[in-house]
Each structure stands twice: as C-alpha cells, then as structure tokens.
Image (tube, rainbow, N blue to C red):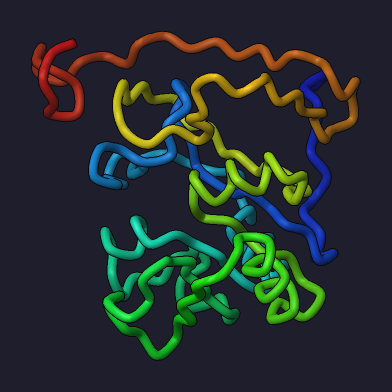
Length: 202
C-alpha cells in the first residue's frame, strides 16, 4: 500500500509559482549559475507536459539571463509557447532577444504584467532573488520544487536571506499541511574510486 502523500496535477489558474529544480542542500544553481548538475536525473512521467500546458509566462532575473543569453528559460522547450520577461534595472545593456521583454519596474508590477500576458494561465518565477522578494510581499501562491538527490555545497540558494524571520509553508498534498517530509538516501558509488562528478574531493 502506497502511503506517500500525492500531489494533485498542476492546474492553470492564474497562479504565481516559484518553480525550480533544487539540490537536496537547497541550491537551485551552482556557482556562476551552472546548471550541468541537473543532468542524469529522472522525473515523474508527464510532469514536463503538465507544466507546459499550465504555464502562460515566465519571469526571470538579469543574472540568469546574462549567464544564458538567448536560452529558452523554460523546460518545455519548443513545445511551450508563452511570454518571457526579464526584470532588470538596466534593460538598455541586456543582450536583446525578440522573444523576451525586459522590464525595469517594481517586482509587483512585473508580476502584474506577466499575469496579464499569461492569459489566465500560471506564471513561473525563475529567479531566486525575485522569488524571495515576492515571498516577503505575500505574492507567491505556490512553491513548486523538484528536489534531486545531489549535494552541491555551493551556488545559488533558493532562499538566501540572513537575518530574515522563518517563512512557514503549508504542504500541498493529501495529508496534513504541516507534515514533515521524510526522505532516505545513501551515497552513490564513486566511479573509478575518484571524486564524484569529476569535482574536487570534499
């Protein structure tokens, strides 16, 4: 009998989603926005299509755009059709892209613009710093996190606000909203006896 709490499928309801794949130790990108650590993990079948169908717009930040200029900032790839916004204080010197709108405004106004463009579908926040600002203002409807079994030890954290009061969350599933999440892992075998993933020893 499966007693694992189950998530309901994502729905297109004009929500503001803070959506990331995250390492077990809380990083959403490696140093310098490195993303190659995400390779080699399997996800729930149909999950990518679920978000592709329910997402109408993406709002990202300048640091991520500068790290991957011109890249489609959404896992749905060519199958996804929606509006992409990048929030920046200096849109005039951003690498231009015909499919991206650069915004220089308050973060709440950026969300309003993105929601209008989403046409009733959800918007996804693809920026740790923007997401943290929206959490503080009460403008995030859901955090959608796909936690992969890897420890990065360094990089960009999902929520990096030293001195901030704890932000309590309710889990969205078929159990108690404050139920803890228990996971169990063991270290994967090292290949050839050397450091894993080609990095330096811990």
